[in-house]
Length: 419
Ligand SMILES: [Zn+2]
Image 1: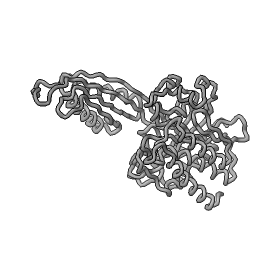
Image 2: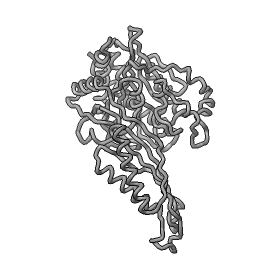
Image 3: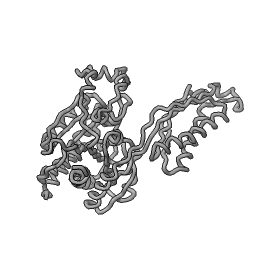
Image 4: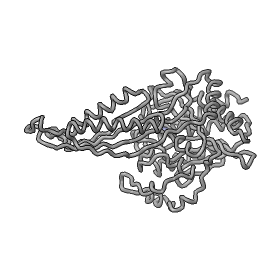
């Protein structure tokens, strides 16, 4: 048994560490920490020092992934990896990603304080680039650790015109050597990720923790609507092809489409118009559609229906449209055996279980292509995330800490039928 004072100490330290990492930012006013930056260097060294304090053997790889290992006595055993990301969006909250990283270290500290001897190798992982802010690339850290890094990302360019290849070279790492970095996540392993929910379901249900069953499929579409710009005072309305009025109707159609289908989320979050002048009819409107559904097959079917509606609006208004498929990510199912073990631990620790699916992407989603995954969600205030006011209660984090330690034990003892 672990003494309550031990748990209190580990919990208090975890909360302090959230604040410490929350202050490591490239901006004085808010939290922004992006891939291959000096802020990531500072944060990675701190995370490494906390892993060392937890008794882990740690290293930082050339991508700024931080890896802390607790080896099993059985050399050939598969691994249980626990982690999340520590890069942030622009003007971020302190909990997104970081909470999962710190819970992995804290849960391991708890198990070690208890004198637990794992049958499997246990790794705490802190991934370097989940948000993809700098190069518009997501899941870079987890891809590398799965041996699935796509070299074409090296040619992507940041807002200053520097390519990822140049950014690596500037740090003294030759990206030609990426192929020699051995993946540490293998097909027989299990990956566990804890993350703030980033949505309002747990708060509405009154439960501190949720068990994730799947991560939704998502696609990003770009729509360019071209009409004809003209003088706002002289062009009769029946002779106009107003690209913005057309885009506005399309945006409302996107909203209606999602409202009629509760399993779907469809969002237009970006709109640019030209010439963007108060006395000119807009000649062009470019907007994005972020479209998500529980599984990829359904997502593709529904996308055809949605785009058909958009095309018919364009046709009726004599507007030319160009539709670009920018990105598509498959859904990822959490492993049923691992999910059951997580549910068992959450029920034992909190007396309740809420199952939900994640509409947001996570490293676990990428890792699901390599091995079995399980995810735990922690309630966050107002479902708010990617925002400076993002907040998770200290008491909920304590529940998550106890549950994570229990989850690791249950997975270590039960998830590997062949051991
Ligand atoms: Zn995140």
